[in-house]
Length: 115
Length: 112
Image (spheres, rainbow over the protein chains, first blue to last red):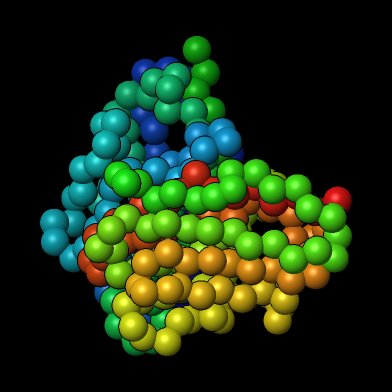
């Protein structure tokens, strides 16, 4: 079975500060990993994905994430937070084999950016 | 269209009525997911379609919920005898193997 844990349901950073949102996964096989962002009253937008190519993945809006197999982590970072980054962020895992191909999401992290 | 289209965007229904929610995926996307997002909650997996394979229905919460995907394209999620706890945003996503998945804007269902 696969699962995702996002540490910290709420994270606050100052504008211009580093953003670090944590995601740890559990999967019996190397998975695909995703980060999505959800702005209020909107659907989910794909930020970036890891599909077994480069371990450092760059996404939209200046975000990036590093796949660390030894730590089973896929943390999301951005060097300098903008006010427009305030949103909810979801990490997701999907198995690459077997019958369970569902996307499993973490419980989300609400990011607040302080002026 | 360029994205995943869901209709209606909002639906208010009386308890006990049946509702149908529609998802038009991106053309050529073989995978289609339905999720449910309740207020302040994460995403709850409901059902997954992949090509012509049998769907993964393991997330459907009760037999009042069903979904079909016709011709490998449009999907309909049906909720029979709606209950107040069914109130949520229902999200559809489509994609291809090994790629990211594109979500629609969702249908906000309110059962009164």
